[in-house]
View 1 (spheres, rainbow over the protein chains, first blue to last red):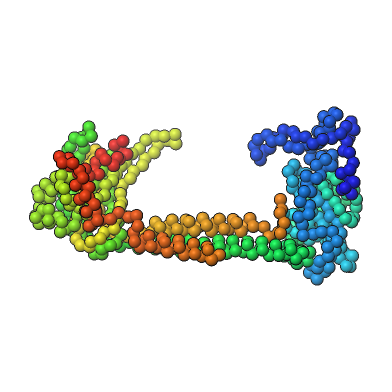
View 2 (cartoon, chains in turn cyan, purple):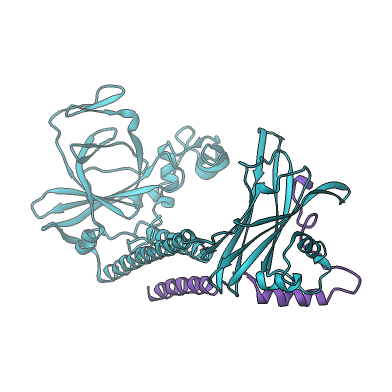
Length: 463
Length: 63
């Protein structure tokens, strides 16, 4: 039937001129741009026929059938589903009228040994099995809805399918481009379809059937093998995704454990000596206030461990209000401090040492941390903002256990209480590598999950 | 599948090793002192070693 149609010259109904394939500009609301869509155009009168006309499908039918052999079903094939043997006797291919790109599905007609008809609807690798159904009551006369066994189905939910290909024995003689309005709905857990064409209404009821069942019934040895391969690949991708998900969880747990298992070094702020308080200095073309203090000694009991030192502002003592303060902290081994001071840790000796520390060829300290605290406000296009940073931290690996001092040097643009600055030291664990690993594994897991999701089981190219 | 398992084990062992050996972290103590001693030796006579204090790091209030 379709072959005969192809041989006919397709004429313009308005002037009997020849129709040819052409394009017209059309605004695509999804793409948000003007696109070129195919139309059938009369070479004589120039009339255009779009996808809502039969002429369009007569001219473009072959563009919707390029993959018509990519199916497990074939005319004449016999196979058993749920113990019932069926023979495939006919097929119709529909195209969604709303789409000008290919959007087709096949309706395969099968007959059982007992003479019962069944439709296998195949779309994008899924197969639905439908049988004809006679409803107890149906009223399609209303303009906006269908009354189906007491259920109201809005007519606006329907869509139009156009026949683009037909073969075999079918209950009626379909024509290329023939439209059918289709309503799909669920009732009492079952799927129903009403197909309304110009002359008749067909009602079917059914459900999706696992593709494996279809393959077992109608697949060839080759397609079954290919199908099994695809199923295995999909399973492997999902298994890999699960494996990486487990790895992500393990790495995250290790990161959280490492992050939370810190041990503070006690007594850091127990002893404090202020060496200078808000001494005015002229630096970098401005007056700044300079303070010095030394805290400790405190006991760092373990060597070759990771420690975190934190210097911050205690706003309970003094608020940082629209000002800045910079700090430099030197971690100093008690033995080295004694060596440089001759064991005399009085204020004048310590002050002399630290005032001249930059000229010393030998480092006094075991580690140095610098940073700044600030409090600012302003206006931007979102309105008023007020931000501050009241602490600074640094991680370091200490190779020698023992008693240590922390010398802190402070510069600020306003006089500040030196008591408002605190120093804390705690033994820490590295967690950053576990975080990076968990992110990497989450990415790999997601990648494999998506690969599994996109892996088609169907042993054909589907589009 | 085995390749994924190997990747997973390598990642977990790798991150554990990097954490255990504190790769990428600053070293304090003997290493710091010897490194800074060498740095100061390379500074020409008459100048002083400059610590990263005020004016060097840059602070938002001072910009």
